[in-house]
View 1 (cartoon, rainbow, N blue to C red):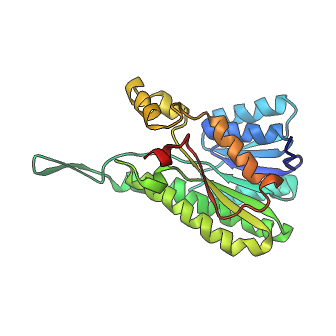
View 2: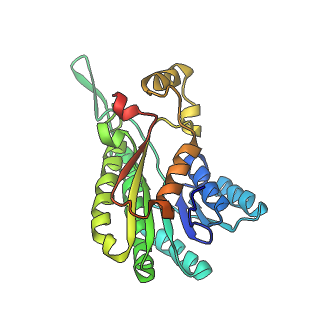
View 3: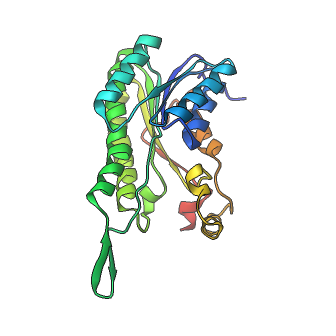
Length: 260
C-alpha cells in the first residue's frame, strides 16, 4: 500500500461541483485531506461539500469565479483564515464554447468563433489557472513546500477540430506548468498537469451515442475514462509517492495520444 501522506493536508479544488472536480475533491477527502471546493454552481457545490461533511470529512464550499482575480484572492484569504495554510491547489475548473474559427461554405463565411466564445474560455481555463496559482504561491513559498496541479487535455497536445479556444487554453496550461516548475522548484513547490482523454462526465453524457461510440473506438483501451481515473492521477501527483515529479504532463487517456 502506498502511503500518500495526504492526511491532514489542506487542498483547494476548483470546478469541484461535478464531474472530475467532484471526484477529485472526494478522493482527497477520503485520504484525510481538508478540502475547499470552489465552483460557480452554488447548489451542486454546496451539496457536494455537505455530502463530504456528513461522512466526517472537513470540507467547505466557496462560490468562486476563477476568471475574477478579486474573487480568487478573497477566497484564498478565507481559506487561510480557516486553515492557516494551503498545501495543494488543483486547477480543475474549465468550460467549452466550441466552434470553428471560420466556417466556410459555398465561397462565403457562414459563421466564425466570436469574441465572446474566445474570451469566456480563455477567462476560465487559462486566466483562471493563472489567478488561482498566483494567489496561493506566496503561502506555498512561506511554507517551503506545496503542490500545484492543473487540468490540461490531450487536445492541448494534438489539437482538435472546432476547439481553437479550448485547445489554446490547454496548450497554455502545459506551458505555464513547465515555466512554474522552473520558477518554484527552488522553494520546494512541485508543479504538474494532467491531460485527460475522453472522460464520462455530465457534458459528454448529453452527446449522441454515435459520437460516444466514436470516442471509444478512437481510444486504444476502447472505453471512456471515469472521473475517478483523473482524480486518482491528481491524488498520486499530490502525494509523497510523487515527491520527485515536477514539470510533467501526465496523460490519462486510455492510450489516446499514442493511438492518434
